[in-house]
Amino acid sequence: MKPLTQDRAPIYEALEHVRKMRLVPFDVPGHKRGRGNPELVELLGEKCVGMDVNSMKPLDNLCHPVSVIRDAEVLAAQAFGAAHAFLMVGGTTSAVQSMILAVAKRGDKIILPRNVHRSVMGAMVLCGAVPVYVNPECDDRLGISLGMRVDAVKQAIRDNPDAKAVLVNNPTYYGICSDLRSIVGLAHEHGMLCLADEAHGTHFYFGEDMPVSAMAAGADMAAVSMHKSGGSLTQSSLLLTGPAMEEGYVRQIINLTQTTSASYLLLSSLDISRRNLALRGRESFGRVVRLARYAREEINAIGDYYAYGKELVNGDSVFDFDETKLSVNTLDVGLAGIEVYDLLRDEYDIQIEFGDLGNILAYLSIGDRERDLERLVSALAEIRRRFHRSKAGLMKQEYIDPVVAVSPQEAFYADKESLPLRQTTGRICSEFVMCYPPGIPILAPGERITPQILDYIEYALAKGCSMTGPEAADISRLNVLK
Image (cartoon, rainbow, N blue to C red; front, side, top):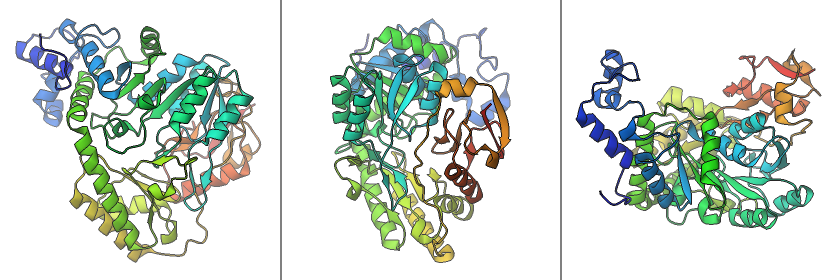
């Protein structure tokens, strides 16, 4: 038996062993290693389809791992400095929801920033927890939400001593980091758990001179998107836990919502990507940081664009900044971020991560090349030359303080009626409204609808933001409580 070291990939090794056995499949999936679906084989390749198999004894079972999946979890926990790591095949949405469901039940409070991903609010709809918002500061020039101030968290804890947990974004979509170590200390001092949404922070565990990772800061749970900066397949993720969390109970929570038919393509991609990061992550992410610094300098030299970085750090609401996030403010060019996002794709064949009302984000990771960044910089320069105009009339991506009237669960399941958008002023929303990406709700169930929020929604729609959430697909109506 080979020792369990970071150069191993137990799930992938087991898959290779099963493939060489040439088993005759009388189990699912029904394509039978691709023989029943030749077009799928043509699309994905024979090896890929051949590895799309069902759980069997040699391959372990994600719901109750005892062999190769268990070994992969142990290696992931070691690589990330966690007490335990759970392999997730429902995306980081599933990992975030499992965090919330593991610490809160109906009526329990969780302290959190309002600029959380929709998965956090979705979990509150499922379990009935009540959000206590720490309204973040905003950067007036950039129009973005910043991190959680330690004093604001302290006040929220003082006002809600019965809260079960504090949740922190580490980092935000734009790269902003809160003082996670201090927030963890505050939570623990008051008998609360600390949870981290690290969907965009996989590299914190491996890069040099990076913001602190959740596990290093002493957080109790962290949801980590391996498929974002970590290089695994889309929809694969990790849930990390610290020593205060009971492994068996957390797995029970995960099994409430995660599939019993886990994809071995996703599982093996997590296994292989963890190995890659453990062996080569420091070197790889050092290169990513160098690329990001180069691109930031070049974009700022164009004029009017502002690619922001560590100069934002103020020791509090911006405690640190993730330099791999190439976030660029576009307002001085006279264009909303979503307009630059669309121009880059439609005119220059460049697909960036997202554009909002005032910013764009180019997501850099281990697969990026210098020549691709040069192409991005050139395209941005040409967009400025071709489309520059006055910024008069452009709306900033300003944070709107929510007015929480009832819990998300109560509002979501309450008796409701559908009204035209402008007739909902003053009513309580019973559904989500968000631009996606980044998937941060503009409205969540239980929040009161204000004219300012409706102005924001209509402006975002007019600028071409992709809006999701409401039952009415065209966002012309909203469901509100009767």
